[in-house]
Each structure stands twice: as structure tokens, then as C-alpha cells.
Length: 141
Image (cartoon, rainbow, N blue to C red; front, side, top):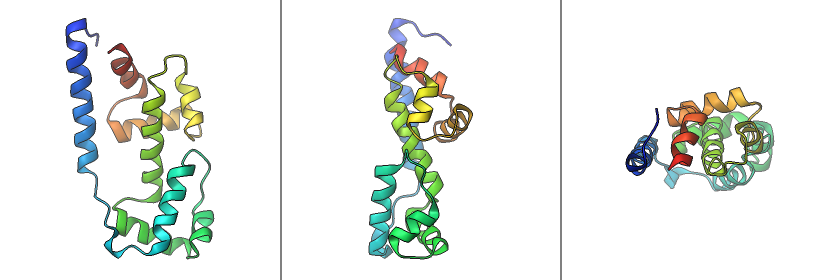
């Protein structure tokens, strides 16, 4: 699909509205019952999402069993740790795609994906479109 100059703004606005709607449908954080160690774990994941994180490492830092960490994380945040990490990585990738000089392969590795196909699958699952299509729409505007 190709956009002429007059429809670029509308296309970007429509794309952003769809992304916001998708994010709005995600479960809200429920911190009222969250233990104190969970906020430290969430911050660790947010700061190191591009690194190779393991459930064992996170649970060791939190001082709880890996199964307990996984259950409490899902119960309080409404999504699993892996889903949370993928959303953070896809968000960072979206920001990096604004730079035309970086290839999708470079972006996938810098955001912590094992390879470009893993990146493409996760990106499509979160946004509903391929990274190439997203980039073409956003960069052309």
C-alpha cells in the first residue's frame, strides 16, 4: 500500500490510534496486592529487557521461588513475564525504527531478540503488523 502526501498524516494517526486502542485493552496493573519485591523485579525487567533475562535470576534477586514469582507477576500485572518483556522490546524497536539507517536485523538484536524471525513474530503479535510495514508507514510520514 502506498500513501500520497495528503493521506500520510491520516495513516499515521490511524496507526497510532490502533496501537493505543490495543494497549488500552491490555490488563491494567493491580499493585494493591503486590508484594514489595515485585516492584524491584519489574524495574529490573524494565531496565534490562534487552539482555538475556532468566526466571531463575529474577527470582534469586527477588528472594522467592521462580514459580511463585511467575504466578504473582501474572496475577498482579495481568500478563506473564515473557509477554511483558516482548512488549518492552517491541516498544523500543518502534522507537529505533524511526532511524532509517538501522536495519531491522540490527534493531532486532539491539532490543534483545534472538533473531529477526523471532522479532517479526513478537512484533506482529503485539502490533498486528510486520516490522517492515510499520516502518514503511511511520517513516514515510
